[in-house]
Length: 172
Image (cartoon, rainbow, N blue to C red; front, side):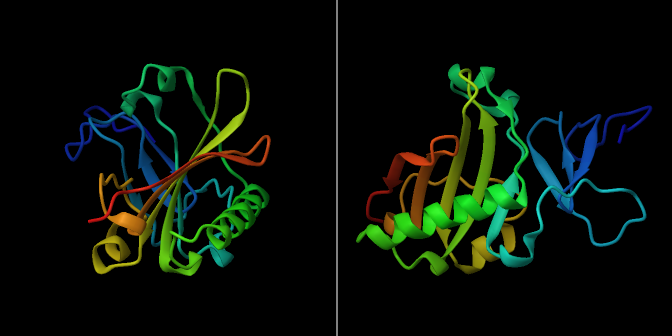
């Protein structure tokens, strides 16, 4: 979608895409999206979320990243099959980690991108299910610097199937 002749006042976005049940503003002052409740427009649905109620998959927009390395990464749209693979790896990781809570107690926010070497890398932010997260986890990526085992960051190399980073935040 192109907002013409002016940018969208809300976040100064000029373009948006319809994807996985959301309107994603792709070039605004900050990444944002709105859930589509009803539309007659065609929406690209790469993922069937029927079995993934506590997951939210975000587009990787490198123009909103701070790391110089991330500027070269390219978004990789996930499929339902890939999300199944991610889910299975995460369940096993949580089962093996004594510091983490039960896997079902977390919302999972996921971003996927292709690295410079062509590997599919997945950033996963896991947050305990609380009222604040319940209302917001689908709409924008959350960032916290503390929170103990209610704040877990995982970097998964989906190409190799291996966890490269597992970071459980400090105790709140």
